[in-house]
Image 1 (cartoon, rainbow, N blue to C red):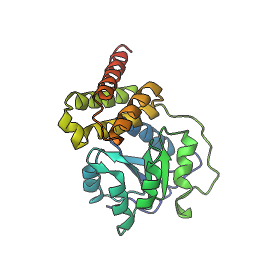
Image 2: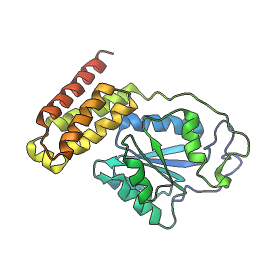
Image 3: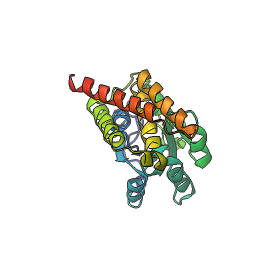
Image 4: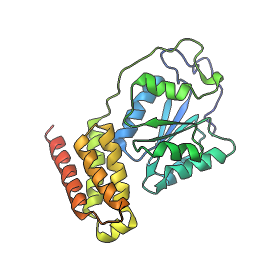
Length: 242
């Protein structure tokens, strides 16, 4: 099913809803980040679908071809760059492919794989999000009237943040030295790094960076992983009292 369907009078983009008539597929394992993107898409008039892994995204794309796809660069079953490369070389091609991450190196990797653009975490205002999409779309997809600039910053659901922390805590609790070798901690650190940036949690982000630095040096950062695990548990305890 092709979601590039021509605009009808009921789905023509407008100043208030500049993404009306479009479908956005978000490939993101974080519920917190997904909720932010969901709110921005809904406010902009777009339909949104979500996949939480490379596997589920590929299954979705066998049936639906969205107008826009936003791919997180770190997913539980591989790098988002793999999917971006596949999409870039596919025919028909998705109209707009965007990468997303909070990692400094990720934008270069996304663009090298074929992404048309990149959205950095934490996400900015609604107007910034809309501009990241509209500035890269063909003219036919854009509103014919001036867009209303909405500088509101979207606040995702705190329950989604708690769900992400619980997922990370469960994974870390099961972590062993073998899991470190298998890259489980690498994935969890990347996952928590995105959460820390999106929620502007500097302490959590510093703990993530300590783990990542140890892994880059080829070490088994047991103490740093333990510290990170403790911070996640603290965040969960704090959220339970709210």
